Amino acid sequence: MSDAGPSDEQRAWFEQACVELHERYAPLQDGEPASYIPELSAVDPDRFAIAAVTLDGQQILVGDVEQAFTIQSISKLLVYGLALELHGRDAVLAKVGVSPTGDSFNAIELDEATNRAPNPMVNAGAIAVTDLIAGASVEQRIETMRSMYERYLGRRPEIDHDVWASERATGNRNRAIAYLMLSRGIVGDNVEETLDLYFAQCSVLVTVADLAMIGAIIANHGAHPLTGERIVSREVTRDMLTVALTCGMYDYAGEWAYSVGIPAKSGVGGGILGMLPGAGGLATFSPRLDAIGNSVRGLRVFEELSAEFEMHLFDPDRPWRRTLGR
Ligand code: GLN
Picture 1 (spheres, rainbow, N blue to C red):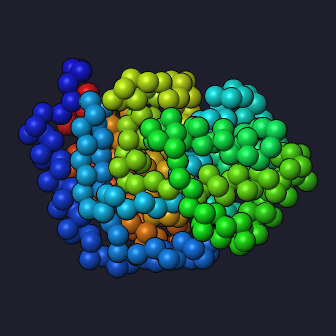
Picture 2: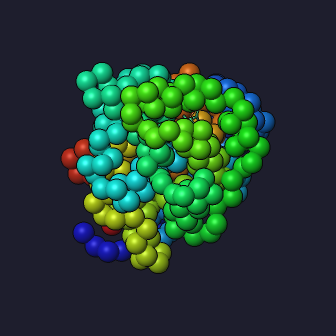
């Protein structure tokens, strides 16, 4: 394997494929933006963007790449990494398992035998993980979270205060999940504070280009592809990639692993973050969601790119290592 990224020709081929997929799927009107968080339905449903970042730092940007949107559930993956770094695997595993559920992301369920939340990518698990981001006050806890985002984004993260307030005002299902976990001893008794932090982490604004860079960082096992700076430890990225592959796409995770085979995390803001270990990050943004909560156009783009460039993790030759990166 060479250290060089894709050749100009390979890059042009990949970029052309992204442009064509953008054109092909832009007219697709299936699905609706999330509305259970009222403020999320204020988004323009037709926005659409695709971005990729290779490990040698080349960027491919197509469509509404400057459009900011809330990161939502994609935050669960990053905060999971943070909790693992702060507390180690055993302490995190004591609260949250790693079993895919096949149930919806906001299911009110805990593991019967252990009381643990099933996995960190459903709301229960994510809230339990957020509970582990400790601090003397909610401000201090938010600051810990903000500085994590700052490392990934290379700038202070901006929180969409309208979305944050909207989640706080309407998040009673998440409240129910959190109080159930309190009754089972999985989270501490500062439940409202933890929920506030969880809603804040979901309300951070990103662009598709940010997501592709975050994907490249994780795909590079935690070292920033441009600066070499360590953003998250190597061991932790292995665990992040594993839960992304097995649980990242909600109850579609099994089908996704089978047909796309790229560790990924989606959010109800319309983003999908994909990570190709050793190659780069791939991301899409389109707010129209299917019934499961995944971006309709995003799914199509990932399916098509994975097939055309043989990006599935278990493709025997993994030619994308040469095509898209190292
Ligand atoms: N903030 C959202 C919620 O808790 C995140 C859900 C998601 O993106 N799936 O409902």
